Length: 126
Image (cartoon, rainbow, N blue to C red; front, side, top):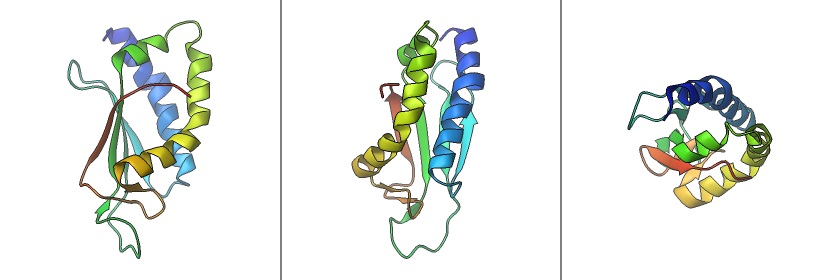
């Protein structure tokens, strides 16, 4: 990926995704951005929660890594990219439940079925 594009995604877009997800989870989980580390090490948004006693849910505390397709990130740099990104942020409230159902995640109890869940190659479709 172009270094300028990676830097821009790391500073302008990924932090807003992390904030939006944190807000949707009512800050009951931590979100952080792990910046682009070169080929094979894409920008990540991590969603983690400390291990706690849960009355329901799965065996493991949240430890989710989100990454996006390089072509999708580059499309955000196009003239219509800002509007597309705003639609994506608005759609996150629908995406989180879809991820729960598909991947054994329970945001309510802050648990998941697997030790680590990677949601990779994501797009910015609303």
